[in-house]
Each structure stands twice: as C-alpha cells, then as structure tokens.
Amino acid sequence: MSVLTLQLAGPLQAWGASARFARRTTENAPTKSGVLGLLAAAVGLARDADRELAELATLHFGVRIDQPGNRVRDFQTARDLDTGKPMPLSERFYLSDAVFVAAVAGGETVVSNLYEALRRPTYLPYLGRRSCPPARPVELAVHPGNDLVGVLRAEPWRAADWYQRRREREADVELTVLTEEPASGSTPNATLRDQPISFDPRHRRYGLRSVHTSTVTVPNPRARTRQTVPAHDPTSLLDLA
Image (cartoon, rainbow, N blue to C red; front, side):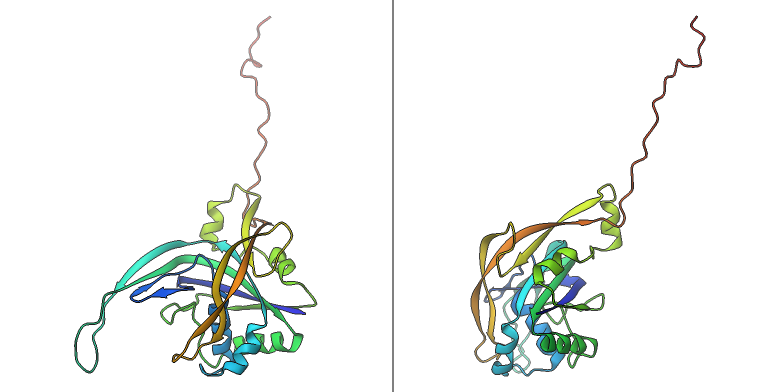
C-alpha cells in the first residue's frame, strides 16, 4: 500500500458534509468527499462517472489539522438569469487561514497516477468550493509501502510561518489527526455522511463513515531555546567584611 499526502492551504476553504436549502456549512477539517472530488477533477472524471468514482472511494482517508483557522460567514445574493427575480439569500460558512495535511492510501499504481494527475490536473483543484483556490501546491509526495496513520504522524508541520512564530516558545506541538480507521489511542467520536457514491448533479449520493480522532506531537521548526540565566548575587561586589 502507498500513501499520497496532500497540502490543503488557502485563504478560504469550505468542506461541507451537509447542506440545508440556502445554508451551506463547513466541517472543521476536509471531508473525504471533498478531497476525492479534488482528485477526481485532477484526473478528469466526469461528474456522472460513478464506476470510476467507486474505485476512488475505496481509498483509505485521513487528515491532520496543522492550522485550524477561523470560521467566517458570508451572505450571497443572486438573480435568475431568465426572469430577473432575486433568489433566496444564501448563508455560507468558510474556514479562513487554515492548513491541513490530507492523505489517501491505496494501490501503488493508483496512488502514483493520482500524484501525477495533481501535477498536471485536467481541471484546476479547489478547496471544497470553486471560490476557494489553493495557496500552495496541493501534491506533497508518494510514500510507498507505508501506512496512512504513520505517514500523517511523520509529516513535518505545515502551518504558515506567522502561525509557527506565534508558538515559538513550544518545542513540540500537538496536532489532531482524523482517520476513518482506528489508530493507536484513537476514539470514534463522529459519523459523517461524506463517503461519495455519486457526484452526478441529478442524484448526488453519499454514504456514512466513522471518524476516529487521535493526536500526534511533531517538532516545531521555529522553536526558540530558552537561555539559562546564571545566578547573580547583587551583593557579591560589596566588601561586607
């Protein structure tokens, strides 16, 4: 089994697992359906290519939260092009200034092909919604013969420089890891309907999957070592004899 690591960083991201009419929410981390949609676009799959999507859906998935970002809300208005009538006000949520490391694991050939597709994508990648372009290259590396959790634990901290400087007093940082399979010390604490079955706009369908949460400690490359101040006696220069 090989593992493909992805870097998901941008000014805005949106990873919705559910939508209710004019309200579009976002999860706190990338969803499996969103990341597989990004990969399907890079490969060039049509939205109604359910058979090829089913093959992608067999990939194991996990994500590490390197920089959680902030949740922001936006209101959008639109008009019908034919009638000119205003559409209902749309409320949309995004993650601002977030950075994630996602990983998919599967056969060596499949993973290698996905990596090459990301380097030369058929359709440009975006982070959950078309209005959310990535700020950095998405593809990181292919790790042959590794397990997904082990790769996520070994990956360097990918947070932005300014965010790392904020935590420069910490030699190590603790990051949250979300996987669909149990990891050492993990707890299943959520169920998401983000297992893609069909991206066809006529009948989008998603299945349920479990989410297991664990933590990993990684070194902080911007950590500042504290200098030891020697003991000082202010009366040492005084002649008290």
